[in-house]
Length: 222
Length: 222
DNA sequence: AACAAAATTTAGACAAAACTAAATTTATTG
DNA sequence: CAATAAATTTAGTTTTGTCTAAATTTTGTT
Figure 1 (cartoon, each protein chain N blue to C red):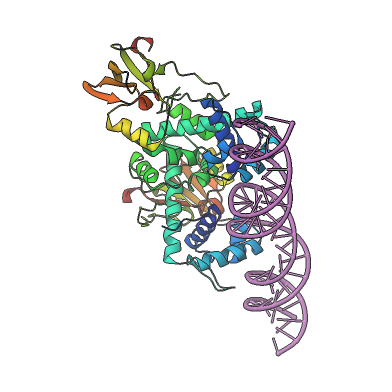
Figure 2 (cartoon, chains in turn red, purple, yellow, blue):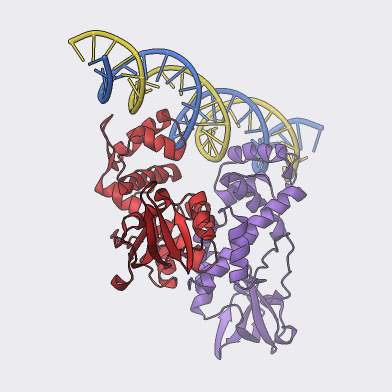
């Protein structure tokens, strides 16, 4: 299988991540994510096009080819397995895993990843609740909806968080919320769309911004 | 602490490894080990000298400065901890670990390494029996001597192997010899310096070359 | 539809790490 | 102690991935 450079892998991953978020991938968007200049991105897009990894017509959103998506998914798989390892085995917290997983995802060894997967017990979801692609690139989509859209008075379980910024994650830590936590919405404040919730018998107020990034499900569907 | 490029790390590691083996580190030796040309090595040696990591006068052996040695030891520490992880946790065999550990040793995260060390139970030796440097660069030297120099008829234990070539290690696998194996020398053949040994109640003949790379100790010293 | 604003590309440079080929320095040895 | 062999360096390229500044293309607005 095609061997990619570290940079090429990071570009593919970025394009995949934008695609996953539903944001169209443009030169500029990629440049911002990778903290590169648009000129550099332009060069790399040409290269990835020539290698058959993306479809690219200037000013239109960039799309991965199936080959490109396959490679992107294998990087995502490695990233999420390593994140799981860091949390489950080495006791890393949510905020600590990203910079390390970002490095580990580029290690090249089929054997390593299949053994790691086995060692971790073939996890389906990573510590953020994101699905871990299978070796052939299949994803088990998250079943759930944003806490901001959940009904009042129903027992809910946190299944994922849709943001991995450090500040967001340490806030969740602070309020003692993690994957698997039970939540009940006590009240909704129409003025700012914030919600009052019960987490571990503590009542707190969550802004709409926060609530919209927490994905929950009915406990029963578990 | 000084941040090194992947190449710089590999050069330091190579110089350290030669030093450890007692072979003087010359331009050529390094070039061979890293499969680079002497011209490339020459450039890099200049760079490492300027960074204060090596002492270098052309045509004389290259020596690490204490700063250089410290950095080399931290890479060796990472390499050997990862090797231990691959074998103890992921069930890798001797021959499989090298290419992967070679990549993992460059991951940069103090936290990762200290957690990994803890997770593995603070091992003193890696799967080849080589000592794992402590965080401050101390080594617990191997206690033992080459099997080629051991006496006849005494119960011995394999404590290390001084060669990590694939062919050597798979030969050891084949004859069912690993760290911790018991060995008794039955006879020595003066003609070719080979020895007849008992490993797990099987008698086989080991060449001098092989016997000289297997480090053993008296079981009692354990 | 024209034109300003925004997005993208092109052109030209640079740094890192490698290379080849030629020049130079050191070592060896007859 | 020359002269040859071996080791090392220098000079000049190459590749990869980045950059800045300038040019160009597209988009959106009036």
